[in-house]
Image (cartoon, rainbow, N blue to C red; front, side, top):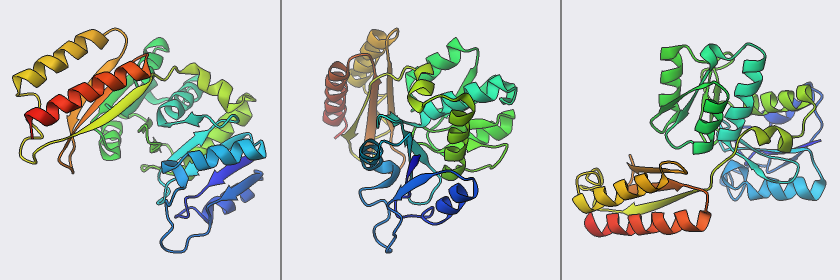
Length: 274
């Protein structure tokens, strides 16, 4: 039996109809929208709700949609998060094994975990990475003729069925793979090793957020970090498109250490670009 969290949003009624028509047994939470409780401590943006629900009810899988229903995250039978990067890996393996992965490729954004890149390389898959945003993922898919893409947030595009993200479609595909492979989700997720990742926002002057690569002190600090993590992690610095922020992302093997390094760089950026 599976658990579903509809985030008091767009999927609160249709998800039940879909799973009932497929004969899938489920328990559902956060399916009583009142006009103001959408995404309110529930759904894919608060995955701890479905994680707790799965563990308390001893369910095989937990699914969490976001308010408008285009994203889907999951938790395995132990309540552990299965994010968009892991879902992409699981889908790509299944599609490739069945001769249905177009050009043996998948599309993700620059925010996807380094583990996805290593997974693709180890499995002879081509990984294309775009700017952040599902529109850029879809543009690359259409341009190159790919049929699988998505974001770490759980916005997955299966273009053989739909040209937009669809949380219900994503969850049905995930359940189908579990049933056909006769594997638990915890077993399926073993194909990819997700690196610890930290993101810290540096608050900067609105006219300076694109200048982080022009300041010599910041450039030197970034180059030093890139050299340090080149074989065991990743450093990504980008300006927010909507806020006065520079986003500092570091991936590596030690959560405490990368958090320290990201905080140091964010502090430097704030100091130089305030």
